[in-house]
Image 1 (spheres, helix red, strand yellow):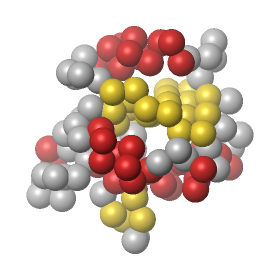
Image 2 (cartoon, helix red, strand yellow; image 1 turned 30 degrees about the vertical axis):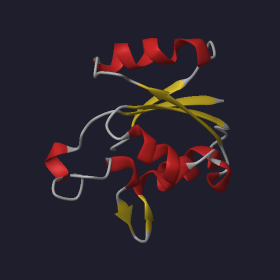
Image 3 (cartoon, one colour; image 1 turned 120 degrees about the horizontal axis):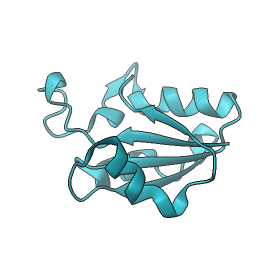
Amino acid sequence: MQAVILVGGEGTRLRPLTSGTPKPIVTFVDRPFMSFMLEWLAGHGVDDVIMSCGFLATKVKAVLGDGSAYGVRLRFVEEPEPRGTAGALKYAEALLDDRFLLLNGDT
């Protein structure tokens, strides 16, 4: 099963925590916030995750890596500029299966 996680926002409501760190990798209980979602997805049969990144995407990639630490294959699509949910999916289109889950990365 495949999932797409939208993590392109700048996290303005969480500043100063997110001034130089994207929301998905803000430390929460000694680990990146996103690690909880990735492990939850893996535990429910999701094995392929595409993260649609924008703000500081290289930091997200560096911290989360290939996803093996969380039990998933993790791939990244970089949004050159925010275009909302439909835009994020358009950038990821070439990687999408016929069926996939779509999640917001900050919930």
